[in-house]
Image (cartoon, rainbow, N blue to C red; front, side, top):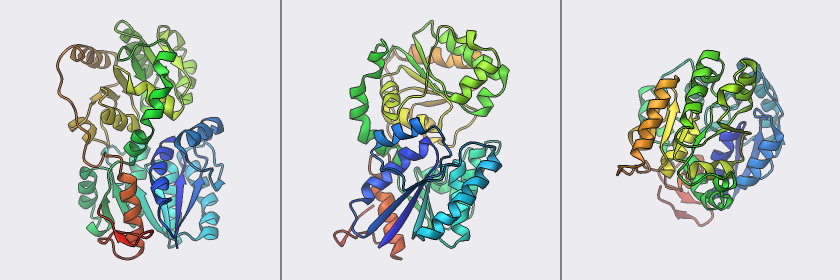
Length: 382
């Protein structure tokens, strides 16, 4: 029996965990436990995402809620320690780069429980991002590092991590996207808003560097308002962003923009799939747009997912009105021209979750190079 304890804390984790939990069900002798730290504390949105993704109800919700970086990380650690002591899993599986990821990895490592990090090795080289620090620390603690792209393997080797701890598995976010794309398209979210396919911009924005400075936020909002001269703009505004818009008195800056509440996973993918362009600072949307072939403007100076730029549809844009507008104009012009068709990067094929599971199970057996399906006893190639 191999016991896997999966940790999720915020919405991006849910999509990643779903891609691993599903394939693991097919293996005999595997017990799975799902712990929700409650870092993302909107129960209505969490419940919606779990239902959309086909995730089981969490075995436990630690309910840590919001707080500063230190307060939230400490609360997760304090709540998670007795959970690990009670279940004594073979693996604690953590996902992505949120505070719950590093907090639970640290607890497990100190208790002598092996840690697997799904989406390991991503680096922006920007240590002002809390997520970058979470990634670096988690990767140093993890016993098994499961990477979404080849550049992530290179990053880990440069940091002195031995090759026997690293496995290239591909992108689990894309697994979930491809599995549920048909359902998302059936939602016809754009049509429900009176939007024509390929004739609108879809926007999300939530990072502190973009929304906590009133001058930066004002410039971004001005660019969105000006973009409406090309086509409608739909802005799925994070609660943090909405609060800042109100705090800074900027509501009138987006009078022509359709500002809506955060969407369910399926509705979000439905809108992304038929957008002319996505404007965002989200890590996950960089991947989803690349997988779908939708132009993406990432309002950030750097990205931990450079493969979305070199092989995909992503372009980095400075957070000011003119830079964003110039990038939008370029997209609008390109829509009328013959274009290079981007390709999905290696391992973005819908089978990354299977590779994660076989890597975990065979590492458990001490034979990481002989991948065997314990349900059949047959060797499986990764």
